[in-house]
Length: 422
Image 1 (tube, rainbow, N blue to C red):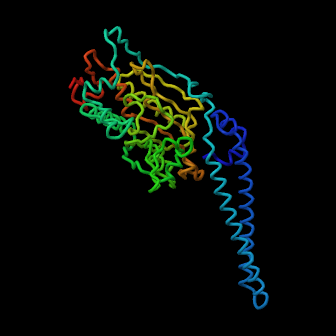
Image 2 (image 1 turned 180 degrees about the vertical axis):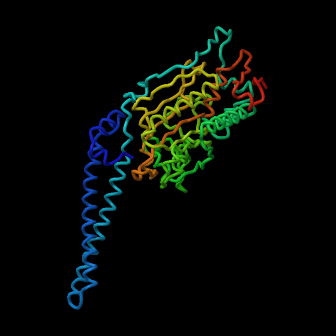
């Protein structure tokens, strides 16, 4: 949620941010108008309430006819206070609903534009030349069959399109990736968490997933629960309505969970294999910190993600995501895209977003120091999204006969240096 005081004092900054995202600019003026109405309604209520309190004291000291007259006035005033309170409450609901439609302020350094207008920050590693190695690369679906690791046919039979089974070494590879990710997170000072994946509307709305991302969210209407698309949601809501001690910041959590996405609007995209699926497992980093430390914390999250990709021995690039492709909560976002040989392209495997105080205001998460109580900053970063990392590992480390070499970092968890054919 945008700081309403900042919006009052800097409406042009908020307008420019909305424009940079390609979103509604006029909403800024509508928020300012209803904010004036809200403040007037609050002032009216407080004035009447003060009169009511003063009158109550007068009634206590009065006698006879004077007291009867004051009591009659008190009854009339009580009706006015009740009406003013109802008006104030309704206007506050309308004002909050409108301000919740505003996205977070863009970082001035974020590139402006649509999905294709990202800025490449760096390339790490060199894509493998399979022609030089004397064979044509197989894609992860074919490799998955040869290794007995991925079964999309039975996945579709049981659960429909974009579903799959990980079997044998495929399942073992997931366990290895999760164990390596959690081990890495522990070394970096994260607390491991296995969060709920069914959450209440307040958690989903508070993290910003019921706005532009709502079409991809699974909603259990009968129970009014949501299946999370990322453990960012329950991790962000973990400290909802709490005041955190300043001396404990940053507070970092690494959540392992299943994630669920409808993939609405992706018809015809990545229909083969396990790149774009409805259910997958992921280890997500989440950090609560002081706002002034958020930029440095964002850089740390990105570095931990880069360390993970380097440990998987996979070529990748880091991009600065353009404004029109940011989620509503993010002020800036970096994606890491792994090289996928059979697609001859880099594909997103992790990302990290700085959400500043935006989510914390919506979730009422604050910290207290010598200067008072203030909203914390929240940041998130995917350490490993299992299916896409499996795709990258299988395709980049394959051999001509269909066997796949295991990255050295995962060998202790798998007890082998190579996945053999079944």
